[in-house]
Image 1: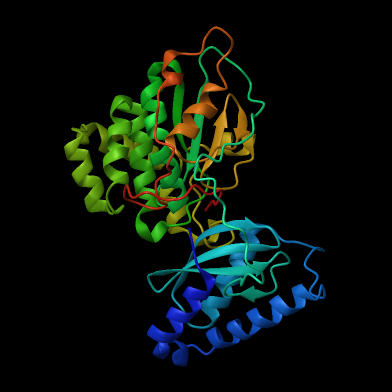
Image 2 (image 1 turned 120 degrees about the vertical axis):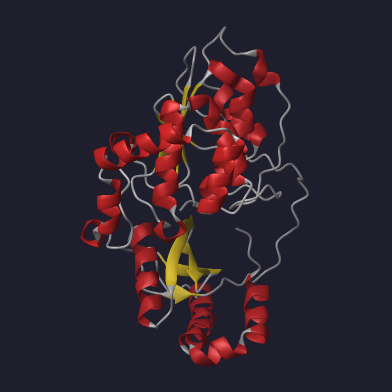
Length: 343
């Protein structure tokens, strides 16, 4: 998610003055931002000691926002070097904040103290190093996501063209992270639908995803895509009911005492694989049992997967020319920038 810190603060100050007056904590965070930058520059503010997890940092910021009377939800947390970049959905708007690695201090934005040279490399394919991926004649490709995580949807949009090109030369599986960060958006229900489509109407999964990812992620969108792709709804509904009972999906959602960190309902359709691979965020790509990094444009995904074929088994599809431009995070097929951010 791209953000110009200076533009962010200036425009918020101009266009949302009333919001600032109503929520004085915002002013204090801007003052804190200046102090933190000065202290870092002076090498006084030491955040290299004890650290908390990204999840804990996001939880701390969320609790603070709620304590200020804000309707907030964590959209994503990204390890940004010295800080965690936490994106909150604040009263319907996505707002980025930086939290120190110890989880104790909040900074609304980081300001560059010196001008960086313009990067003249226009190639958006950032899959730069060859990775040690186990080889096989038919690679298994597992993509772990949350259905409404903006970075998960970005990854899905990027990998689908690669999987379509490779066809049955790979075993592709859409997997789900063991907790849902966006339950208010219908994430739990949507993931159950997608799980069942893959399980019982597998050939229609990618067409359904292509339709759903191009919309806004609502239940109405899902219904429209089910119709468009000609999903057998009777079969789907029976599977959803069975899956809900088997994995206690509704039970986990309705009982907040079982939620992860008291914030996120558990979603356990792929619990064992989450534990096996140590899945901690959306998206996470696993190829032949190993967690793999890849840029999120179609060309990079194809190149990454093709590294996992054993000698003599690399299909002609690996020479397919796909787009090297990543899609934007979130729903819709706008062009964007590849990122390593996760929910």
